[in-house]
Amino acid sequence: MGPLMPAGPLQNRVLPTGEIVAIPARGTLTGNRGILHDRQGRLGRARWRHPNWVCCALEFRGRYHGPMPDRGWTALFFLDEAVALTAGHRPCHQCRHADAGRFRAAWDRALGPAATTKQIDRILHPARVSRDRQQIRHQAEARTLPDGCFVLGQRPLLLWGDAALPYSPQGYAAPVRRPEGPVTVLTPAPMIAVLRAGYAPRLHPTAPVPLP
Image (tube, rainbow, N blue to C red; front, side, top):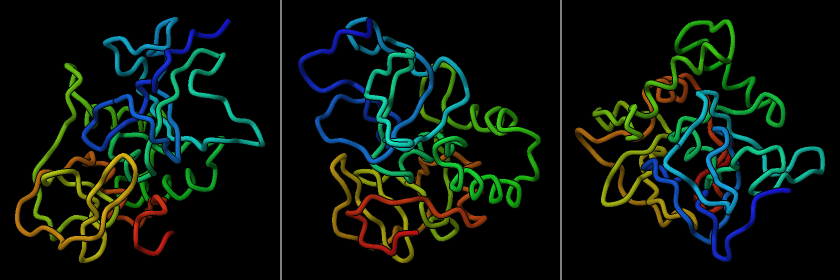
C-alpha cells in the first residue's frame, strides 16, 4: 500500500533557493533524491538519501508515476530545467536520454571527461548543499555568468542574454535589466561551467526567450 495523501498540496516543489515547499502550482519536470516522505506523504528532516540527483520527465513511455510512486521514492517537482539545474539535478539517462547526452558532452568540455555519472555526482554533491542542508551559494560578476543560471535579487532571477527573468513558482514575470557587478549565484559552480560550455536548459513556457 502506498502512502496516505494529505488533503492539501504536498511539500514537493523545489525553489531556486533550495527550499522544498507545499504549493498548488505544478512543475514541468520531476526529480529524485530517494525516500524523503513518511506514510502520510509528509517530508521529514532529510532532503536527500543519496547523491544521485536526477531530473526526469513527468511522463515516460505513456506512464505517469504520480507524486509518491509505489516504488517508494519521493517525486520532487521543478518549474523547469533551469530550476532543476540550480537545485543540483542532472538530466536522467533513461527518460531524458538525449538531454543527458547533451549535458554529458558539455560536462566533458567544461570539466574534463567523467568515467561515470557517479563520478559526476561526486563532484556535484558538495557544490549543491552543505551537510546542514543549506544551499551552497557563491559570488561572481554578473557579466561573466552564462544564460540559464539563477542569481539572487529581491527574488531569484534567471539570467538570459541582456535580461533577467524574475522567478515565481507559477512562472516568470516580465524581463528586467540584467544585474551588473557582483551577484550571489544560486546555481552550483559545476552547473555554471556546464551552462558556459553550451548546455541550454529547457525553460518554462512563460519565459519570453527562444526555447532550446
